Length: 496
Image 1 (cartoon, rainbow, N blue to C red):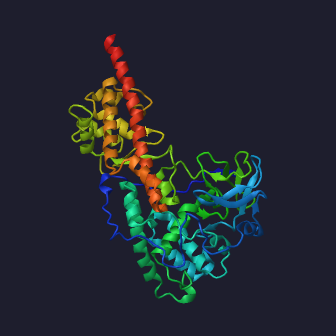
Image 2: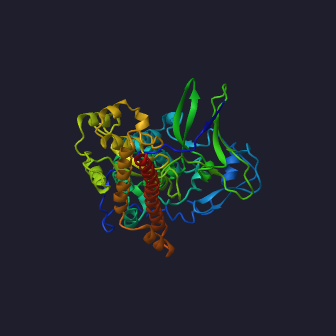
């Protein structure tokens, strides 16, 4: 049977609040650097070793399929990618990998009694589930250290380094100017520094033949390299199916992972497993006609730029799924309402029925999720919009009789009346102004710095914060249009 898979990897949730603003001193912040043979810069995308083996030939030799018109070539700004040397028709198989080629962890045979494998599994106890990439990264490091590893032709073709924020200089981490991402970058750096200590402690007395990395030293930089390699290249796919059950595990897919990202991809990943055959085949199929010299692309997922930069090391311009994250905070929303000219806002002291309503939205109570978003396809997160509409009215009966999904929908105009809707939208616009003022620089200033030519890490930080500010401005424009439309309708109502 055939199962069409999304190529997005599983991602961790960014918990954004104003409380996560961190003061970063470039002179004291510990950043991850490559001091060993694991290194370099990703702009020119040097491989791990000079003149690595031909990856296409290796895949074919190991029983995989690669379309004769598929070539490896440089692909700005992502580095190496796959291109078509001549036109490829829609529906053509581009790449097919039999089950033994993907690199995964844990493997199906559970190590076959190998002590080094057992010791590697033991190290995963220290890795939180949200950093799943580190678990597969440990397997990647083990294979990298192993003489004659089956995957060496693939590993040797991996980049020496990555443009992920955990490797930014301290000043460029600060240049991101966005608290939620700063929090995540610092969290990952702290984890890697702490995990280095755990790894050293666990392996210091292990015999050489049982050492998970062949006796080689593993530090925070090499751990960061491995985690970055996995987070930027792995796919979460189904493992071998047994009965009605199929594990969902991360896999590194040699050659397939050289397809770059597009929201309108020309290729897609397909998993196939025959009913009488337990072996899995992972394919990439042309989703449209691919023209000569076109790059082959997959959709990594409908993700914000936080995820793209944090896990992949790039920023998507005009990303329709980008958003900004705020904390639902009564004081902040009172300030926004008053700035918008709304009289007597009561976000800080909601009535009992309003508290009950906020609980339904999971914005009140012990286990409340206070992260809310602006931007993306919704423009305003439904929970936030419903909360504003409910807290800017004293009409409990109207709120309680109104369908919750209606109150959460921006496409439903003024469910609680024109005046209430205008107050809610004006509060949101004021909230955008407050969020925009949290950035110490303006877009024009950022663009002028970019024009001068900067380091890759600085360029990414600048592009990231430009996109975040652009999201806020786009939301303000959208809401302002809606307010003007409401004002014209109010005028017509008053005239009639």
